[in-house]
Image (tube, each protein chain N blue to C red):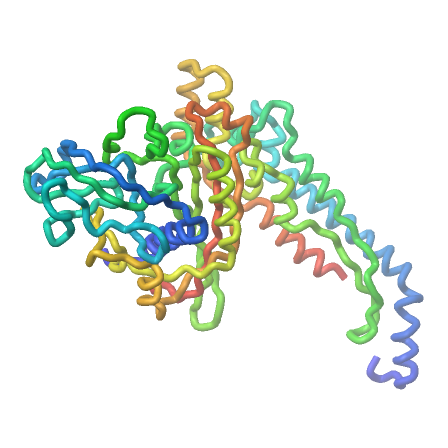
Length: 194
Length: 283
């Protein structure tokens, strides 16, 4: 563009964003949808997500409990609880919107993506026994076996259950990257969309 | 092994937490009363123990209004202090007398913490579900007597440093060290619990003085090194040390529905701290 006369350059800067907006939006929406689908797929195929989705009968495919019990029971969710749904909903709500025309640094249009932050996800994933703490954050930072123990205490405490409780408690929870890593990865990828 | 970063962090965090709670919450009460003799097989045979009904006396003279004992009264003799061979075991709430006289009548005045503060490696489930506690008797129903030494008592707060992580921060090798510490609160009622949680919710952006273990003010018998401890003064002594910053605090309570499952009547809360320090490794 540097070889064009100045008045042509200025005219291009002024008119191109408006003229190209529809085409840019179409192109960006296509790329955005593809990336959003990848994000959701990445989340839904994470071993922690899969294990929790499996419910109380799951096996510890994430390896976070050394193969003993499963995260759904360890965290202390009640049967029928769907802890993944709110996160999925928040990710589904990710939108792309037109923000502004770009004139100074090249020619184009700037879009804004409403990707949720890890903190926003932690805020909607309370532990069943302590609402101020997030189980999703706990996957990353560490979780105690309190939820499991409290749920078992609520039911009967026969020898079989007690021995199972001791088994689970002796197997230490191993924290691992989860939501923060996912959001960080896709934030970068959304920022790189062109 | 010489002192490492984690050691310094633990002692600094513990001293800061105790001081912050006592100062911001005035979480103590002054008591006057008799100290009762009892046998303690774990105690050095040079001493006899006279215990109060309360554990964890306040040690910190920077807490205004708190009575820090320097002597006890013995009927038939003058007040006895450290110069008379008395050792104050603040942790176990007792005075240790040199000699073997077990028939003295001893009274004292001291401030008792509303919450005993402990460092622990126990898991939350052990602390909340498994462990049994004696109540640090505030409303004794029977005749007053001493409280057994050594065991943890409630109301209490258990502190632990759970994780730490370094990430590169600046050219030259400076690291951003992020530490996760937590407090498990066992309270007798919701007023106490809400009070502690509120105090520490507001501790965000507080700066914690880095106090090495050599600055820890308590002796192996539970008395004060040099007979006095003032947290504010001690923190000033280490003013030049690289400080810690409380960058994030999150508080939460065990839900009432869940609490009903517990065998004890305690109210349980959690405070999760993120603490940061910018430092070079091995410093």
